[in-house]
Image 1 (tube, rainbow, N blue to C red):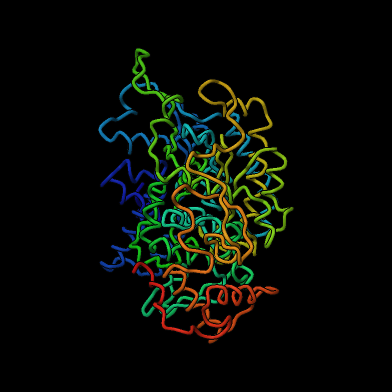
Image 2: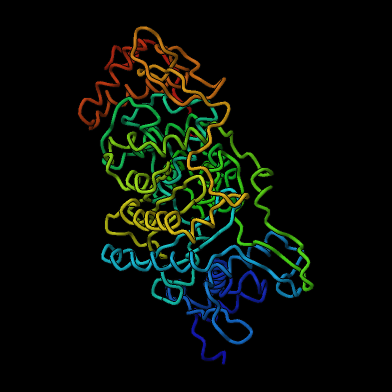
Length: 561
């Protein structure tokens, strides 16, 4: 009876009639909750309740009982089932599949799903001691988009963690897990893995700026690395592999600002999220300030596994009419061939070459890190990146082989911080165990076979435009006899534009600002790191290696200029 409803329940139900399917809390809990907030806000505005009552009602979200089939049985894997329904409604809005008598076959493999849930549950037993109570995992095949497993929460039936919220399709901050996409955007504009960037004190004025992470007004932007030290001049390969923040911020600048990142993110599969204006994110988008879906971040990494081809994640395998005639079927043979080339294969391959380079991680993570161990255990190239959002609220590990992409998120539904636990420590073991199981267990490995029924090649295919070229160590420019050189993964027609001792206008301006920041504010450098900046400056004949520039130079552009 209506008189028995509390305020939270009444507001939830009041929001449903306008769009019953969209705001059905058992199908779309995120939308239902958003609608409930709207109803509560309107009640405050009209004077029916106080703000304190509205806030209390929001926190007391009702327990929603899971959907049941026609016989009253609780549906298995409800998060996946709910997502499949949402996917059909969004992909085919003119067709009501649930009332049309069609036979719909999904991509989920129940054995893989059960194993994924088991791995998550087992790891949560330890993670709870670090104040982490929820987790999500997506397991998908890159070249077909098939979602083999989707763990939406650690326990669907646990109201204390809001287990009915599907984290895989809800907005979360990716932290450093966004960085492969950031550097892909910079590669499109001319950087390469050997380009030398300056990891040094960085500060730009941002009057009136609201930090998208802390929501506090900040008159300037001054990001720090995780260890709060700087590593000097180093190649992009090491900057990405060691997840350094300052170089990632500069990659955003070089790529064209946050709008360029949103653009490439959309192309690679980040279709939801990143919904604010680019200026709202600013350069912080390079550190994961824009919310995204874990499912779609996994899909974006799968795009890298496909050498830049975007194959949309799909929960649907086949649709038949009630006579058994196939109306639509996911075709393994043509899906990848017909896929959209979201970014050049060469640029995707350059990112993969970094994410599989365990030696490049040694500066921060040592060579005995979990990702290197996974690669050694599998005996094949394995690309991976972790991420941790502000105050350890979201922790991630996402990675891929040629035939598999797995994304793992660990955190709390209401965004409470973890106890100083980063992505490689929390999400990493879950990712590692699932990655090993998928390749080592024959019944799982068969699911990853190619269209010919044979295993996909272990090695990532080298695009025709890739070559091993020589660059100089100083700047990553064209080699000269005056400086030591090395080989790097380069793109035909897209190698270094400048000679070793020359800088582009952007790099010259960045060096000028770096020298100015060091002079004005100093900074804590790792052993010998400041000396690498001095050598860089001397090599390109700027600033005498430690002071200000010897001649006027333009400043780097501000965010989205």
